[in-house]
Length: 356
Image 1 (tube, rainbow, N blue to C red):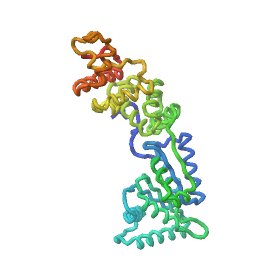
Image 2 (cartoon, rainbow, N blue to C red):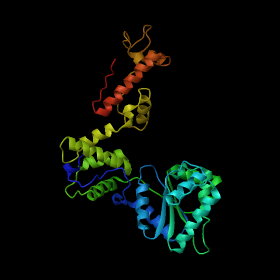
Image 3 (cartoon, one colour):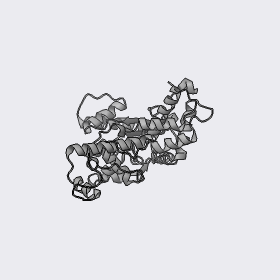
Image 4 (cartoon, helix red, strand yellow):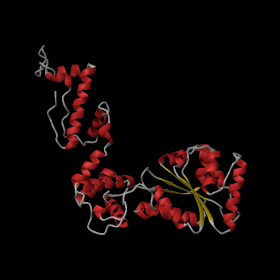
């Protein structure tokens, strides 16, 4: 572990949604303010939609901590369930034992709890994480929960949290009534390079670091690019970069370390050779490899082929004819050549000469 090596009290890039480590960039700050105001104003239904790894759960824990002394809260994350199972999960989360599968009885138990909290002057907040997994029938059950109210105020504040597919689901005509009840819809965007640096500095400071930066400017730039500004990925890259720096006894993470970590975490390294040409094609289409020559097809380099056919046809004419009728073995060899070129490009040892 690198904590002692870098003088840290605790792990700064862990995977747990610890509210202390929440970095409030502009998008996160706006989303938090919107949710907080929605609860304070008793708006009923709120929603937070963002890509995986953007820090939704951490932000929600931070939000609920603000209401810990003034509200009863429940956090539901088991969302692959039917309506009865959902109600059982909800009752269990607020400490109500339920031995019956009777749906009406579960509703009555929950309603009594809401009324008790209201009489005590406390709000009741239910957060449903990964809500994109809920079936339409369960979402309808959630909508009906919002009917618990008094003439003066809603008894229940519900926050639906999920990935972009949640927005797709809510947009369906079958959920029109639920969508109309959502009074606030917030989102989160990836961090910019500057925000990525501040995110890293913030987490290191919370973990006890108070010296010079542990990352060079070049390393930070690559971290921002490789992670795409997604907090979960930033944490992952930083954890492995500090681990590698500790192993090499380096007090500062430089560009080479981050580059090696980025390569180690690149899932494309483990793709089969059949998939590699598709990846190469996508990279060529974006212009990333536009200056790198592709290897000649294997059939154009077979023994005895000196650039022109036996009947005097030009090399290009022969190659074009043969391209249309590759044998399986020739096609496989060509894919190996493309894979080899891609590996050379990634490692920085570009080779323009195909290997026979």
